[in-house]
Length: 145
Image (cartoon, rainbow, N blue to C red):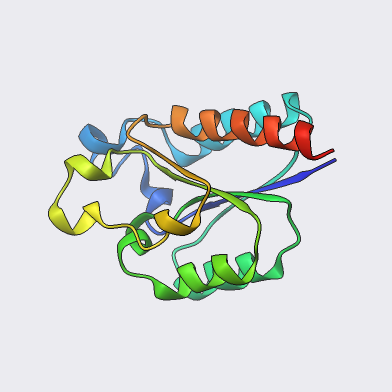
């Protein structure tokens, strides 16, 4: 069974409370339940983690004990060379996901330091973006078998 790792970045534990007009009313737990169900229904083993610390994200990525990664680096999307370098050091297939459309936000949010090294970016579809990413990974897993 292929292993999918999902990493949620800083402040995503505040979903449902933080700026619901931008991020929606669902909590991170609500989203994780949907992701887990979709992954298991797709025959994937799944681990989901949320980290506020950049170092924790880097350490988890560089363990490399997964086949595929969905990452929402959140604020680190725009600032973290360390997360970028960790992704480069663990050559896995990665999808970057953002709940909001980062290209419709403040100028500083329009630049992702990881978009050019991942397989693809899903941005602006709320929690559905994670489900789309799991669908893609399930197809990859079927083709990689």
